[in-house]
Length: 206
Image (cartoon, rainbow, N blue to C red; front, side):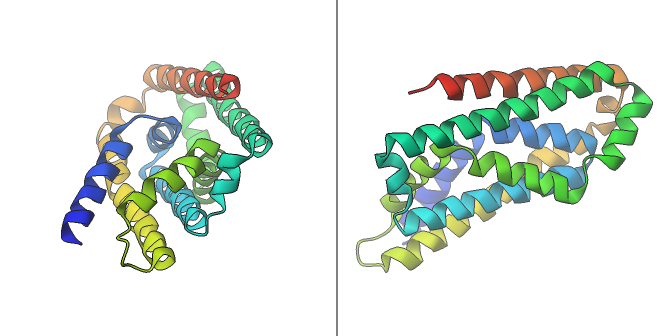
């Protein structure tokens, strides 16, 4: 079991280290505040745990097997990504130092940050399909399949909270530089463009 856990954590490290939409959103919200960044992380990892639990019950197999279900989820996920990207681009276009500070206080509340992380994760059908292909590989044949898979899903989520927490901490350390209006505007432009591009890519995938 120890060897299995080490292999699992190694795989989780590779997954977390691979940049994706969640990484972009976590960094973007962390620029506003560490609290917003951590709440985005918690929302994202709630999604990871839910996908893992659904995979444990075999329900994500339906998503993998049904082209229609996958396509519907794919278009929803693409719309969510594009929506987040457009929000970032709009913020960059109308932002000044004072406006950025006001929006950080008013718009990126803890609940809103948590909801954005959760929504972005749950709207990604690839996350569900990946969970059902990833988690069962590490469940020993002699172990209770359902309970062990859920436990691994929880471990996966907790591990990524720590991993992405480092991102939030690092962005917080650079807050003095990142709070400048010009830097903030450029980061909003970059994150918005990346999110829109990822949404378009997801929409065009088969």
